[in-house]
Image 1: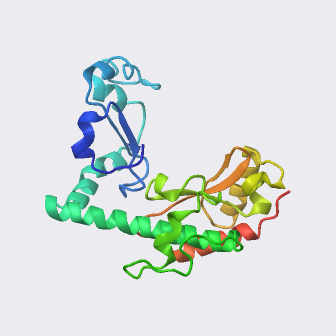
Image 2: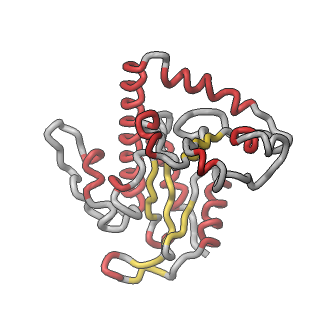
Length: 243
């Protein structure tokens, strides 16, 4: 679970919470957090890590901490990253976190809009050329029916605010169109890896997922991601020729 929202308020309802820290938390790569507030679970389900080493018999934290030779720099940075986000001021940090989450969600919707405009230019989406009561354009209206017409795996409101699966162009994605119309043959995980390797060779890093024979780009967005990056992804995918 990578949805790092409101953990302090909800941790009493969580049996096990596991997350990497290098994405939304903005910590160095190689650090993760596992939280378990239930002694019974710690001593049953989590009693034995997959890799054991020093300290396996010295309690819950120790049995997972010393699993061989490791650079612990990323883990040691976590208190400082947490200080950055909390800023020792609950009111300020809460407002800042909400602003960051809102910005990430706006950036993601804009990114999805860019990809759809390049990959599915003939599709008309609810909200196109409209404005809502606050004057916001189709970027904020995008979630209305992209899932319904199959351009995202599910409606955007069902995705995490920072991630979405966007269907690739029809000649690349394979599978069926709306109403069961056949577009091209079903794709496989091999096709997904071939396209992902092609993108990587063009300095574009994005996972490609195969779901029920259809290929999707699994895009994620932080505050530092830009519209130009989504534009580049869209253009490079259009350069790809399916074998």
